Image 1 (spheres, helix red, strand yellow):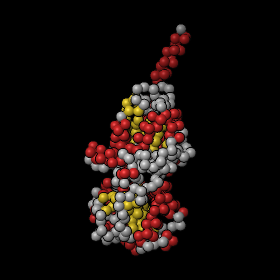
Image 2 (tube, rainbow, N blue to C red; image 1 turned 90 degrees about the horizontal axis):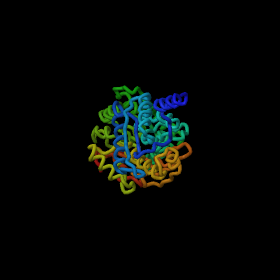
Image 3 (cartoon, rainbow, N blue to C red; image 1 turned 180 degrees about the vertical axis):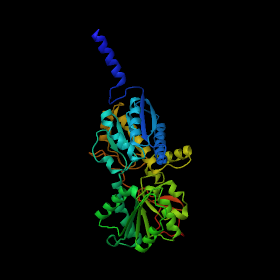
Image 4 (tube, rainbow, N blue to C red; image 1 turned 90 degrees about the vertical axis):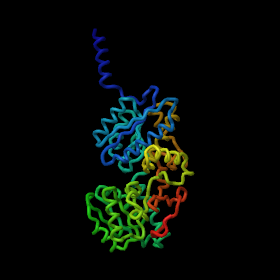
Length: 404
């Protein structure tokens, strides 16, 4: 009798507290994303979701099994945690990171305990790789990589096109309070390269009037302006520059709003001439990135616009993950992790062009080599560097009579 009661208790406990295993053996390969699909980050979150959907449609199957994709909306860490647990209970073991870092930071604390894998494909926060986490991987460049590339590319452009040597370069650095960490990455990298900004100013994210800031920049006589801004402050700041007739010899942004479609929507008269570091995206030299042209055109046909830079990274990351499932030979977290750790793939294999090789902290050391240097010309973001992925030439200082 006691044995029967014990068996019943164990059965009930199994229903209430299912075992956390590293595999989900059935006839479906499950891939998921948890992140913002509504709210202020919805556009980026949906770009990531859309990219994963297209990658899954492209491959169709892995290990001879259908791939099932599911996206969950999360607007805060608590929701990200509960949605991850819900999807895990349904059999999802492979998670692609979303647009906003909060969801990835939440989930990466769960993946080892539960037995799942998370690949951050679009978030750049440095804290994501502060510690090695066994089942967590970082596909895309972190913000400090953007800073390092800024300190590498920008002085070379200043010397080549402005005739100003690095030791004489006058740089201005501005940022809103919400993205000060980006300015810190830029400042640290510039100083390590022997460049100390001569003008620096941060301001509240809700600032409305940029007249004084633009006037101060005008009087500072800088050679290069490095803005760290998002969609709330970047457009009004840029409009005020145009209104006041101020244009530094070179504006070299740390990505963010300056490589996004909503910046281009301001119109050529506002955006032309601006240079931005960027992830690789649909407008790089497509011959060097197999599958990029098909992805970009399919995305545009389906959604009505070309994919965001983050979408290109995510599409490539999803294809890579599916390749690693095939290489592992099983939908098994431990075997898939080992396949990812062993990956050593040269540039040009995936649509985002970069190489793939993860270091001891599970950071992709091929990410960001190179970053795109894009310049807005005729209202379009044209890759003008580096040479292997560029499709045009920069115009510095900007001359509106020379747009291409």
